[in-house]
Image (cartoon, rainbow, N blue to C red):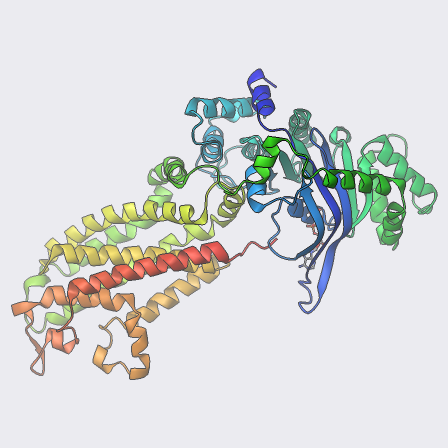
Length: 607
Ligand SMILES: Nc1ncnc2c1ncn2[C@@H]1O[C@H](COP(=O)(O)OP(=O)(O)OP(=O)(O)O)[C@@H](O)[C@H]1O
């Protein structure tokens, strides 16, 4: 590790101790919702700065559950017992700010290069007053430390457009967690999907971080002998119960060897040359299959190891108030995010919007439909706007109706950006990169800016080609407001929907329902009283009404059917068209609020 990164790690706060005391975690059983199930029972132990601890156990034993609880990332279930950092109960803000979590699955921005991805995180998580050069230097050091120099400028990519390899992606994820020099680093299966050479390489890097004082804890499945040897401490779970907590290596092997000779003598001991990590997990798995899981748990509960661990946890908890000033300050932190909203918005814009605006995948669905429909409208309805013949009036009315229908249906193109991005959003929010309101504001600025330009261009094309009457500004504003409402409506539905299928069904259903009450397909007067309420909350009614009034006001309000003028026929004679545009804008604000609530409170990712 180079001098600069040494400095970065050493000048940052050192690791923090973490302790678990009688941790029992209960959830509603997903197989039978009427009952609860304990995924962890009476788990105890501790993590120390400068050490790397392994959470091991057979599949389904509760490793990830325990790691999530430690990192404060569980969103469901009931926790009994205590989890403490430096002897104190951590706040969610402390966990977001001062711990790093490397998820098992990559959640990266595919359009960024490795350097940009790390820099983007550094801008969002390192102090706002730190000069950019220092952030860049810290990122370069991380690239160096994590062995990412060869792919520094390679785009991250995805399964369709291959960018960096799986091992490199894992290291980028570790870099993201490290970019703010966390006190505690949690890693969920950091070696899964990696070949043994890359796994060893990645874990060597992690070990060197621990050597610099960070507290490291990783769940690990089938470590190579080399990787297993890097861990200082081992916590072994079986069916959510402790079967071992203590030093790793010889001590652990001897503990289980002794059990193989006493409690579980029917099970085979470690053979010469056998991978100790594999043997320990196999031993406990076999014991479990033979119905001996409880015996192993009881043996550990009665062991000196457990008494020693409990004693150390007690000692740590007793030191809760005896803290250095830096730790005290970190534990008392009130903000989950590091940088102010303006800085977060600027960073999101610089790294994400700038890339999106250059991407055909982003621009295509947002521009192509409007261009195509403008051309169709232009060629189909050319010059109909100043023709007041009664046979032409239904054409004008239909065209104006389509002018509000198209942006409403076009809202579908804004759904994927919320639904597909959800794992990234959840991870970045859990990492304390930004608040929900900042994320929503960023998405809206990104979409509204484009919608603003789009709407001016296409409203101009259509208004002048069709020689529509009245105010151009109103014609354009109605289109813009409908587009804006469509965007926030799409966000609301996307945030409420668990997946794309549900969102793709829900949005058109709602928009189609709006069409019936907009005032064109059935006259307002003819809508049955028991349905009128829906008309009042139909944004398209206000959009269409304002457009019609704009087109047919004054001497253009000619006789249409049975001596009734156009505006009387549609019950629009007395309306204030600018007021109706204002009401439309209110719908944008209201849906924006709904989108915020849905993003903030609806949790599809349950863990
Ligand atoms: N709500 C629930 N109802 C019933 N069982 C659950 C519920 N939530 C989790 N589980 C079970 O709890 C167990 C522990 O899950 P966890 O992901 O922590 O295991 P793990 O040791 O990390 O497994 P792996 O190594 O396969 O990732 C699993 O068997 C899982 O199916």
